[in-house]
Image (cartoon, rainbow, N blue to C red; front, side, top):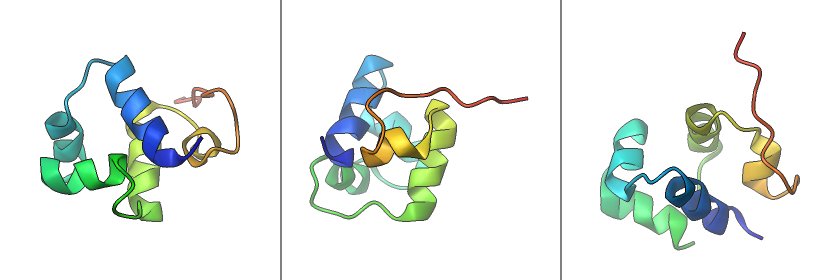
Length: 74
């Protein structure tokens, strides 16, 4: 599974819109949509932002881990 599909799955599992996630990244909905459909590479800095936003490990987002591990936010 690639990160584009995981981005979409994470967003949909939380009932978020592309526009709301795009706001977190300070970008437009259409630009963010290109990450989800695999037309634009996700920069590492944005992957970090999304991992923090979703409270998951980068390993899951990158497809290295099969289950999303929630981060310890202490």
